[in-house]
Length: 87
Image 1 (cartoon, one colour):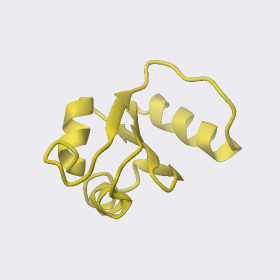
Image 2 (cartoon, rainbow, N blue to C red):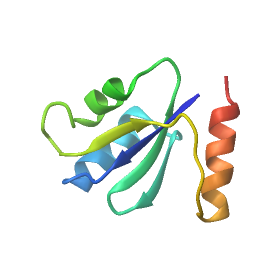
Image 3 (cartoon, one colour):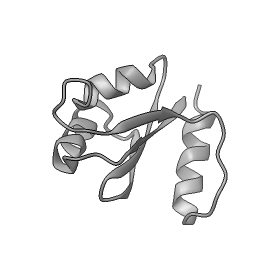
Image 4 (cartoon, rainbow, N blue to C red):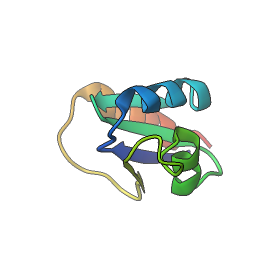
């Protein structure tokens, strides 16, 4: 799976609902307005479309992660490793 970062959204409730609808079990909330989303065979634009960002229901940015590094709680690393390992 590909992991996407959804950051700095202006209407977190809209994004949260869309994630629950379109990506059940495939997203991890990092903070009030930042999430990780996993998907197969989709692009950053597809994620943006499904979350309503492209239509203007919320402002935000969707990035595809090609690599990652940093410091975060253990559950974040476990989630990313599990999702990336799924084919």
